[in-house]
Structures are given as structure tokens and as C-alpha cells.
Image (cartoon, rainbow, N blue to C red; front, side):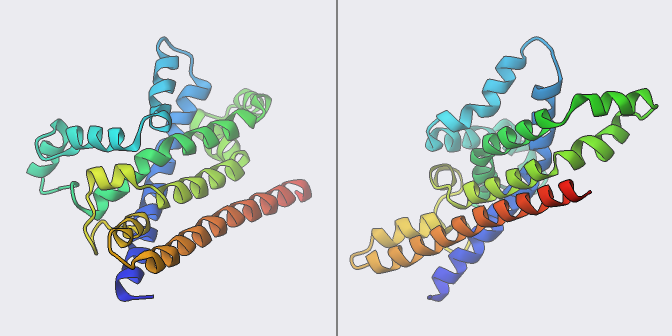
Length: 227
């Protein structure tokens, strides 16, 4: 593996890891709102949360450019604070995390809906407040689903291409993740071998992430049965 390929691999792990770790708490909040709250417009919010699943990634990347670009409403404020996301690895994490976010929300929502509400009601009857119920009952019982959401988000962010190249561009050493490095290799005559090697690395990482997720889920289920 060349230094450039190793750099793309390391950058992919950082970008995907950051996207998943930052996205999980937000996914928990979003999933909790759509799963447990009843208010007008809930269906619309649910649809907006899942919009990146059906939109072309380049559209999502363009929308991020409009919002977080230097001239965008949020990007202009961040630029005044000395924070720039476009063409940076942080921006690549934002783009990859945006595309992975709906998958994380779906996994977290399923986990929250699987928690028996009678347990929470019993805790409420015993005087437990909202935060007590959340951190001692709801989230621990939903933990396998939360871990699955984290791994799914990481795997999805690892393979994101369209939104990343649109928002963060393809800058070697800064935003060139594995999918973008594969794309660059295929633009060069004779680059097929490099592209194949990088594709196999991407496949190995995705399979390893899914196997780890399954192993963690089974381990936690065993602990739950033994408890």
C-alpha cells in the first residue's frame, strides 16, 4: 500500500468515525422525538429526517453547500468565528454523516420502540423523573440498537461518495477518502489495480464493521438473558 493509499484509508476512518460518533446523539434525539412525541407536523419532520435516503447524494451535497458554504446562512456565521467546513475533512464528515443519519435514526427508533413502555410507566409510578427513566431504563434496554446504529452509521459514512465530493471536494490528504481515491485511480490509465486494492480494503472494512455489530448484539442479548 502506497503512502497516498494509507493516507486515504486513515482519513476515511477518521471521517467515518467522526460522522458516526457525532451523529449518534443527534439520531437518539431525533428518533426519540418521532417515536415518543405526538404533535402536528410529526410526519413531515419524519419525512425530512429520511429525505437523504431518497435524494441523490449530489443534491444533499449541494444543499450543504448552500447552507454551510462561505456565503451560506450558517457557513457565513461559522466563517466569522474562524470555522470553515467546505473543502475540509470536517466538512467531509458533515457530508458523510448527513447521508448516514437517516439509517442511524431508523435503527435507534426501532430500538426505542422495542422498549416495553410498561417498564417506564412503572418507574414513573415509583417517582423516577424523565432523565432517570431515560438513562436507567430506556437507553440501557435500547443499547444493542444504539450500537447497531453506530456501526451502521460508520459503515455508511465510510462508503459515501457523492455528497462528500460535492461539498468537500477531492483533495488528497484532506478530503480524499477511500471512495474518492478509487474514483481518482480510475481516472488514470493503469490505475485499475490501485482501484481494485482500495475497493477490497473498503469491502473488508464494511464486512468487519457489520460482523462487529452482529457480535456485539449477540453478546448483549446473552448478557440480557443471563441477567
